[in-house]
Amino acid sequence: MAFAILLLGDAGWRCHAQIVNRLKVDDAVFQRYAYCRMQQFNEDNLGFADTLYRVGIFKENFRYKCLGLTLEFPVRFAQGDYERMDEAVAEIKSIIGGRDDKNIRAFYYPVLHEYCQFLIHIGRASDAMLEARGMERIASEENSALGRMYAHRVVGLIQSYRTNSYLAIQNFTKAADYCKEAKAEQELPNLLILIAQEYIQLGDFPKAEEFCAEAEKYQEYFPSLKVRTLMTRALLYNAKKDWNAFWRIYDTLAEDPLYSVQADNDSRLAIDVEYLKSKGLFDDALAKADSLGTARERFGKKHGIFAAKGEFSPAYGQLDSLMMEKDSIYIKVQNEDMAILDAEMNNAQLRQDAQRLKAQNQMTVLLGFLAMFAIAFFSILLSQWQLRQNLDEMKQKNNQMLIARRAYQKALDAKEAENTLKIKILQNRKPNTSIKI
Image 1 (cartoon, rainbow, N blue to C red):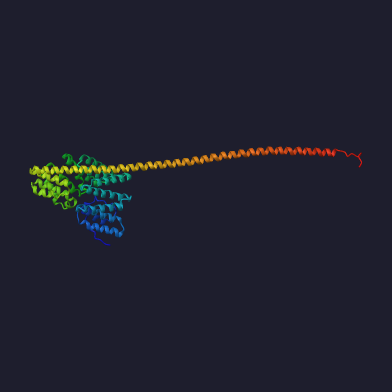
Image 2: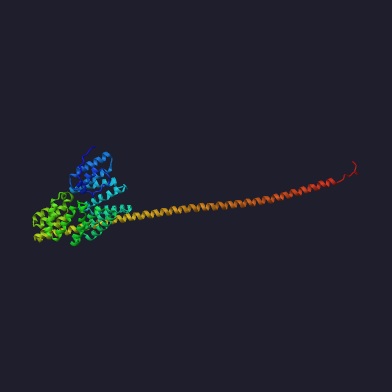
């Protein structure tokens, strides 16, 4: 089976050098794959994803199948086809989840991390938390700093979703420490960007500026960071109300062909809404806000637009809806946490029961062994006692027989002496010749 491979020039290769060929596939195939990963939400990726999957089936090579599936599920997320997204990830997990090869595991962790990002975005934080804890468990068993880095990164994203910026920063910082330990330099600037975005939410603009500038230092080595750092700058300048800087960044993003395929639709729409609002184009901004995928984002953006227009009654209505949405999210997350905690407690109880049963079994085996040993020991003692009894009886009988034999011998000796004496008497007796017949 033949299939077309689009070869990239040297510049293209340098652009996606941070995407590592973990599965060790053919270089030409990997270059095409890495180019598509640079445009993860591009629907054109589905064609190449299908080709890779079919080649994997034809060659009976799970590596090509996995590459095809990892190209597919981001596009399914962008299309809103979450069922197919789940199916693609489930198949990846079934194919490589049990393989112990370090390169395969290093491929597995970022795939799950990306999936968790999408789960959080659509409000499935509990599913993401379970995936993160699964990653942490596997990483702990393997002593993998890379796995721990991705696990903490997911937990940080969940805390960010809950608007717990301090907890998000704590987890992103832990992830950065593990990132350095794992020598996964390509992921460090992404973590710096995430920390910067949390400081923007906290209103600590100097800190946000510091982490954003630190992330930008890596652009020389990882040029694909440009879109993410520009988007973070846009959020920062918008929060600071530095409109000239914000408009300049917005224009730069709009001119970048990678912006539309590296950033998801909601992230682009959110920046579009802020741009239109800053320009005073409130009706256009409201229309854009209505296209946002999540209710929380829609209520938040529309509240800001109505407030900027001075229409406080609808602004209050949007704010009230936003608070209700946040409350429902909080309650939902709390319920999810309780469900997770309950599952963990049940699992812990099962583990305790299993350990207790194991201990009981071990004790039963030990007692059984001791009982068998005691029985055997008692049997030996009994046998020894019986043997001694038998020996004593035999000895007593032997003594009695010996006494009887001696008595018998004495009787024989006495009889023999008597006979000897009689013979002597008979021999010494003279015949009586005086008697006549």
